Length: 308
Image (cartoon, rainbow, N blue to C red; front, top):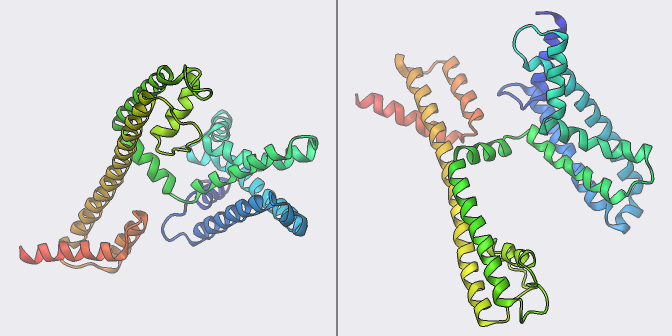
């Protein structure tokens, strides 16, 4: 492997979510996570006139330094994108890999996190409020350094059939509730239910159990529909919550089984040597498992072996 490829691969390892034991990558992850959080706080406080007037220079320097770091990070991610392609690669493969990253969700988030700064520099007449809103997209960069979003999407993907069923049920309730409320209220209600699309706003707020109360039914039929919609909304929300919780629980059970299986393999000779302990510790951290839980599984396997 050429030195160029080695440097590219190592930089890719550093920029991606840290592997267990990679202190450099872990330090970079923590630094960039802290920088994103500082940016979100700074952008939020900028919108308060008295804070902006008092700390304008500080806000400017935070933005300049952050954009500089995020720009370097973005360019590095573009450069190392081909390292994700196994084997030797040609110029065409290199360009394709870089284009794939740039057009991916993560690549677009990375680009949009720095784009407002350069747009404001070259097009000063643009609406600053829109640019500030785009800068808030930097919070999505946290998915680079933390597996929480990945775990959530994995849980949703594993239960996608259940989610499709719940979404289908919600769509039926949404359309039905909007339509029934329109026919019950449009003659007597001065505003809010003059059309089915108008009624959809009320139906969405009610079914999601938000219930602003800015639009309320007047007729007895409308109130009855509202009660039914609210009850069904609670059921649907509880159903979706249960699906997510069940999927997360299944993930944890699967990880426990994998960890327990690795413990059994390590204990085939009856002892855990230093290397085996290090491998189990690496797996524990990778799975986000508490040390107490891991120790309990190890003791459980040891106890089962002793009984045999």
